[in-house]
Length: 155
Image 1 (cartoon, rainbow, N blue to C red):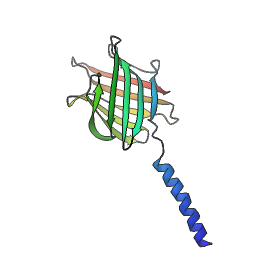
Image 2: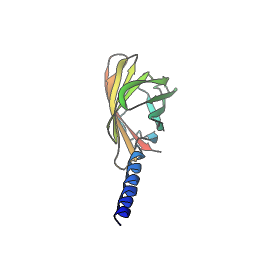
Image 3: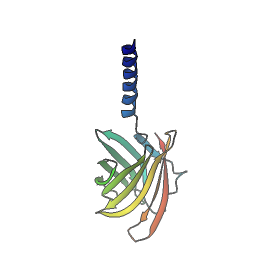
Image 4: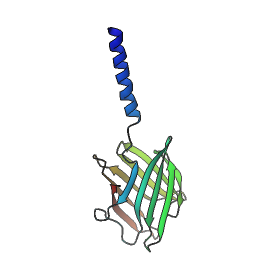
């Protein structure tokens, strides 16, 4: 009888452990910009769609948007949320990004151009997983400081 109890407990714990290992990262998926809830910077471009996907021990972030003049932008970043900068490829004003996990719903972000910080911020997914808010601040190419907020809805 004792062996059966131990076996049942062991199986139950293995299911709990497996579920924890495969718990979905709430950032994963496609996010669409909600301009009405956002506080975007006048004269700057915007990221319209951001998609997070898992790639083994890394994540891939694909960003599609528009520049201030309406030209499309596209960027792809693959890296880890370890606070180190990984290269970003595309036509956005930065060429590397560092993600650092704060908690299971929040990342600290830093975008750089040739090693120089352009902007930093925080990306937080709501408790219900339906929205994501990115608060950011930085300095533009002319040296002017900016601060904004982009709110995304889960697609």
